[in-house]
Length: 76
Image 1 (cartoon, rainbow, N blue to C red):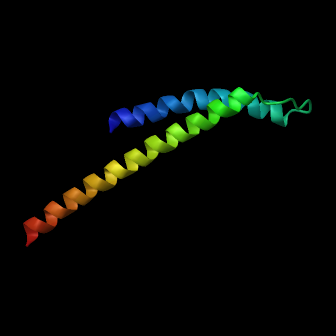
Image 2 (image 1 turned 45 degrees about the horizontal axis):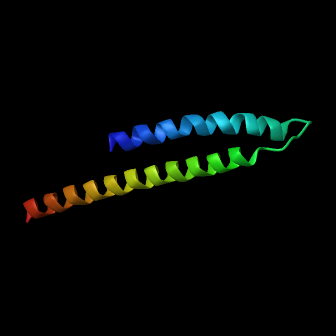
């Protein structure tokens, strides 16, 4: 699970690197066009980050359920 957390963190770095300049272009008075390739890359990175987050959440939930089940069995 640590590897997923690190992978998610490294997906965030290029995402922020693309979003910040694109946001500057959109917020400036000389609004230009954001390249389509930037939009595609940003969407792919967001999907990858979402997938890693969902996998981390699922693994934590599964480990928590497994540990709760063993505790209940030991008390009965």
